[in-house]
Length: 216
Image 1 (cartoon, helix red, strand yellow):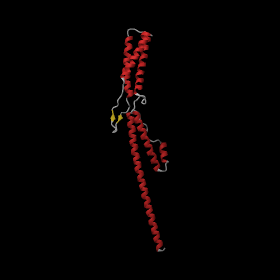
Image 2 (cartoon, one colour; image 1 turned 45 degrees about the horizontal axis):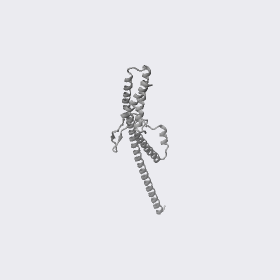
Image 3 (cartoon, rainbow, N blue to C red; image 1 turned 180 degrees about the vertical axis):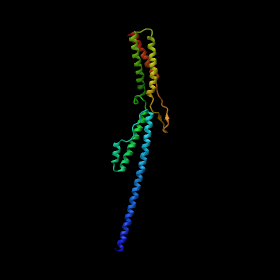
């Protein structure tokens, strides 16, 4: 073998070594990026799981099973490109974060009929109490036929129904989760009760019972 051919082989070997070293370094950098991305996904997943568990505890709901099913694990194992799998995981975490925020916003609204005006909600609660009260009064009137206790029955049940409605309105208007400020601190919610509406409906109930008891 001539000296020039030997030198060419040496140069070719050096070039191959350099290419191999560069490929190895590139693969190591790519692997390190994947490891960092995987660590971030795991950290975000742990934080998301903790927030879901805390929210379920606050709302007094059972915590869902957050362990992946075997079908999901098999599908993830079948992915050939780890970068694609990591991108899917990051997208799923972002969607879960949006769903969690939407759930929190919904829980920060009134418990009963959160999309309607509070006056309509109070009218429904007070009205239901007064309807139940009037039905009880009419049952008493039909069973007893009247008597000295009719005056007490005309006044006392509507007053008690107004008090019950006042408590139920407070529960219906109170959100399940408190509102928070920009710093995440809870803000005391203003819970309307509108007792004048309850008193007005109680008076109407008294008038209806008086009509059935003394006029009709």
